[in-house]
Length: 338
Image (cartoon, rainbow, N blue to C red; front, side):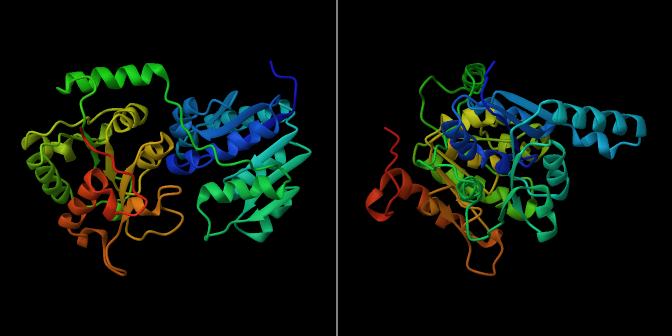
């Protein structure tokens, strides 16, 4: 049991945004090496915290309860949450979500030091130190700005996610099941995001896969439990797909690939935190959506056009450059497949 400060960090959702708190969590740990760090997160994103070695305790909020029609469950769950937050006697509460509910929860902790991102001026009452949300910063830098304004030292950005060994073993087994040999090179294609507006058409991914196949490059299509039916065209054309894999296993699969290609989705941001390259296909390469520190790992259509208009040939060309032709891609590191 740690005997130093007791610190609560809050970011309820979503996958990418929870992941973007990783450098801030590591910064807190560097500044408070003896602290007990707790993280409050929604149940759907809780598995991510297994890759945050600086976190000592995960506090889970099941927001689905509040969508049900059982007043007793709502009252009971709320009371348990509030009782737990108050009884922990936190010395610091850091709200990296900035919504009204997280501001109220931060204030409720009673922590003497309460820091938070503020979207609306009226929410500042919840905190002892506030930082306005800035759209000109990547969320990682926005989170770190909160800590900087609170007086913490920022000694570099630690954005490295650690996958549990059991997850890595599960991914290895799944690769073997799908016909991949140990250590075999492949590309990971993630055609779906949580928002159809951010999806590049599946038929384009299939054209890209055909291009890669002609170059002797194997591909693996990724997909979550709800994507089995949508990946049927992929299976019909003979490509392996990991439909049904959990987020963490999908991350391990993508992390073992030479390059992961997909849209603006938490999974690809997670691959970046695994220190692996990605090619992210974006509606617009805004600072808040790019792979952290790697604007060159993106492609977008012409301004004002939908992502679907991005030609597959252009994606194939960029992929070839990242794999084989470093001289034409600026800072992109030559990846190779040999």
